[in-house]
Picture 1: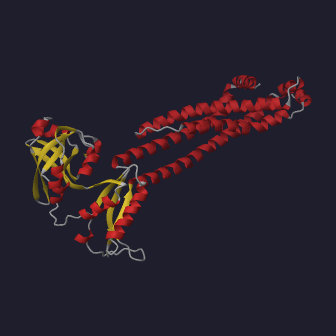
Picture 2: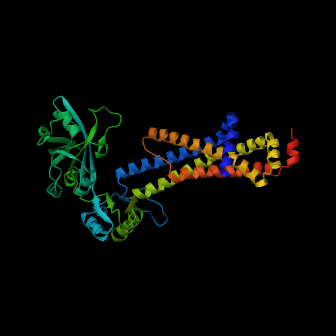
Picture 3: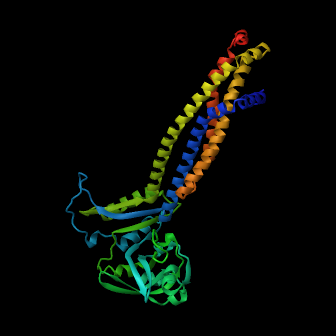
Length: 424
């Protein structure tokens, strides 16, 4: 019986193609909008995950910040930081020992600044960074010549440097061997420093530097020296740090909770009696989760607006089914006279409404997937709705057909066959 009802529904729909298409249009537009929005929301989430992943989703940034008074207010005339206020090496060792189950290392990074290195008429732009071994390991640089920084370099603060292949291309015509052993000289606050090139790495966007809106020749690439060597360029007797980055283990405590634990531990052990400063910890993972929740809320809100067109489409289906029943009153009377039950008549027209909604739903899903893929491509990030979301939309179209088709179908089922046969 069901297949017979589907066949009758398709036959009836084919006889009024334009009206059928216009009836489905509301369903098509509504579902296409919902699917496209789901795809764009997925693309936005993936884009954020990728960007945060490059920065380190498990990274916990630790800063020194001004301490508020008992009323939660801050003193505008807070004293300058003293040597006792900074993070020390002993504090970092104690932190790693206390949180050994959750912390894989501490990143120390110091940006010295950008400069232009010249060789006769040739030049190359670099950004100079001082890194410790954990920070360098995070870079995951691919060496193409020479060597990377070694343990002795980090421990002694050797005056050595690794540069990018783009640096070598600009200054040494791409001859990596010619660049090894050469010096890089730069100036910091009127003082000149010289470092020997010991390695060349393959440049990537994530390796450090600046490439937005500049020519290939003018790209500023990262150059890396041992952290202790970079610290010497600051010409300060204070070895303490004002900030650091902690790498949380992926199988340890959740980064957001770990950030809170570290903050409380540092403040209770080292800054409890400090009159002006305290520690603040910030988790990239917690920020990512917060942004995902915000995007999810926005996506749901926009999907709700798109669903309004589905409601309009459903009302359109009900309206056209009422018109259809009026036009086919004599057919209904004939069927009843030949023995068709009320349930059969009801199911016939509900099936017709469901077929309209399902066809519109399938077209809407396909259109939504195409629109979502196009928009996601423009955004530069892949995104697609979940399979459950697509199935849910198709099931929703079936329910729409049943819900908005029931009233007209029930009206047809209750017709008096004698009155229906007399209908003109």
